[in-house]
Length: 347
Image (cartoon, rainbow, N blue to C red; front, top):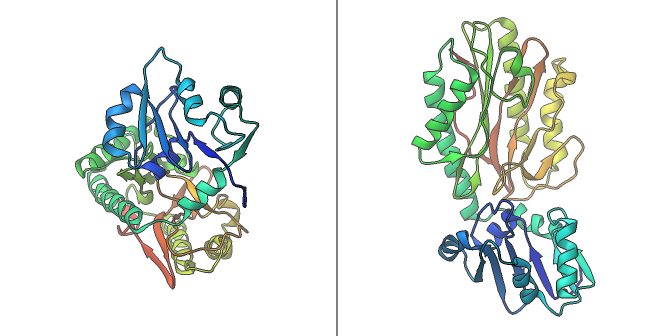
């Protein structure tokens, strides 16, 4: 939509609304939208969110609607008489799009989603500070959990411990924690189960805290009992890959360059086929957002971008290792926000 002079924008993604107004809520099935014109901004919320929106949203007029009322009547009032309206096509449903064009008389809906994501890509200092605070809480919670883990606990027991530890530090869970032991650790997104920690298991913890709607995300590793040579070898390769990728981060290089730095270490050790995901993803208001650090990706890093570095090796039937850190790009390198040690811990 470069160069387009649009009459208004109709924003419905709660994350975009939070970025633009400071107010975040999950409306579930109810309509919540931000109607932007050059002269005003109207935030339409379910009535049950009205008070919270008044306290958090800035520079907008807030109107609420009650269950049983027609929220699209408020939409038509806010956007009436426009020939074209900017929307987030990735988020808006076909049903909602048809209602908007019918109620407002607009002849065209133009996608503005990419522009909003581009705005969010470079973090302000206050945003970086929130991610950094979330990382501090995540580090402290991880240290507490690793100190309390014992043989015979289930993966679900440990996941509950993570949530409690993050709460004790003043945060909330950014996402459902991953706790994977033994062969389960070779499945990167396996959910916690009733499997109990046993001798010889790798134990992978992937978790994070959220502070003021900004997320941290880290992965650290342990082994139950004395680690074998194979445990140590795989962990060492992944740690060196993590360090190589972090060393590659600076303004001006590409996301693919960072991925390649980690991948080359793992390839050289003979584990290339066992590293089958990207090296990282963006962090901010969402735990997964731009940029995406895929193999061969060409996004040029700029100061203020925040993302994870998380290479891994996954050996089916044995176990897997992933070591994940959160970094912010700086002109001559990066700042690592997650400070807990990356050693292979022994339970």
